[in-house]
Amino acid sequence: MVVQARAALLALAVFMFMNIACGSTKEAIIGRWNLSSNTSGGGWRTIEFFKDGSAVLMGSLNVRYAWGDGDRLKIEFPGSAFTFEAKVSGDTLTLKSDQYGYTAVYRR
Figure 1 (cartoon, one colour):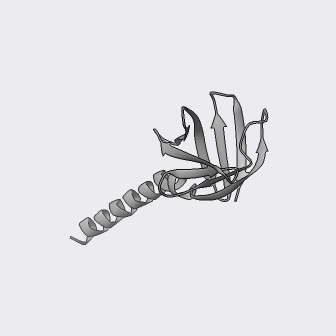
Figure 2: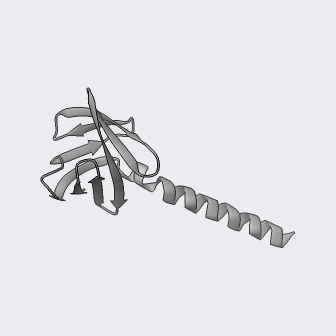
């Protein structure tokens, strides 16, 4: 009985860890980010993401964002959209665009 209880607790701990690890980018992206570096001149100087799926670029451009598969992030403008691979590591956000061939790095 004790062995089964320990196994159940271990399974629950692993499950919770996996959920936290998989959801970390989506929740860690919330907040204001300042452009640190980029390739090919891509990227916006500032991005601020909000929990409701809205974002503000460069302090005044209101857009929407949505998550796709994995860490795919779509930033939606009226009439167009940009898709990125998004990664958050500590206070660093990296947005990589295969579509336009650049990578932008932001810091909090």
